[in-house]
Length: 509
Image (cartoon, rainbow, N blue to C red; front, top):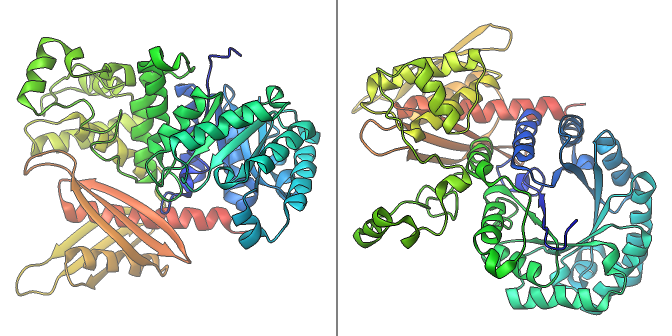
């Protein structure tokens, strides 16, 4: 591989999914992995097989189905975990095992209660264990940015000798500044004599908002793999954002003189898919993929862009897959125009799904004068949620106002086709709906978050509701959309409960 080529290691399905409330089921993970393959990432870290039966199944399924990327499984520095990782990825076209072990004195003293020498020996033995199964082995000394550099040099040299082909340097808690992290990478290049035998990688967290800056500085100092996630999701404040790193390298090639194999035209679609399935909304001012990223409000900016886009746009929105042209969709639009616009937005539905989505579009078009791209995206998202339902919302009726007591009647269709109905009182219509649905499902849970937002402008806009519920210490997120906010709330609640039911089924022995 060329010295100018940067390996893009996507950990959306592993570190990204660790974001509170961002859990994905097996089929959702495969859908994202398939899209990451279209995006042409080099490595997909598909999960952590030893963490749960569901994660093992997801990694194994992705390893079977995705053939144009390296499929990586994360593993503790433990024999059982490494063996489990191998079983999960051994059917992949190009499998990798990623072993991690804490290295900083802070972690050794307070978490592992082991000496540096003990950790060094464990790292050597476990990398060698993974190497027995395959040649592609990665090792991460966790919390590397707070580790004594001299010890870090020793452990890196030792794991390379033991067979590691990639050594990843994590800024696990997002503590480093660009100058510090760059110096750390530069020190490794200069002081680890066998570093040329491995790919030097970085994994930066965003606790101080420096993950992308630290990753780019590391590339300047010799790293050639970047671990990142779509939309920057992940633990706490998240990870380095894949789209920001890739577009920084592409847009400022005059500075970095590096390239990737990413198909940037797939970035926007991938971002929307991950946002939909994880239920993490992309903030409007998010670089590259935010709704405001290519919008101009200032008169001076608008004037400049009209005359010559380059005056205020350093990137062409089409480069990241945002459609440039806009078909006006309304109640007179036909099925062919509907299909074409979805294709331009990056969506491909089979005939059955297209028929359902087109029916929903016609219903929406009767209520709205003009249907926007965001409306269409919301319709497709709702169709996707319907396909993975356990219980289906069949009927909802709400009585509310002043001075009556809010009351909701709900009817659900169970997987076996049986119909269940119940009613409940609440402090408001949404509370009544939530209670009625829970009476039918019958699984104790706690509502921890309820968010409402408008998909587009106007009184006739689609309303989108995001709900997070907690059951047995695990957070499940649901999303629902409708021009009726009560219906959207019911769909979101049921979406979260369906995710809970699917997760319980997968993880049950």
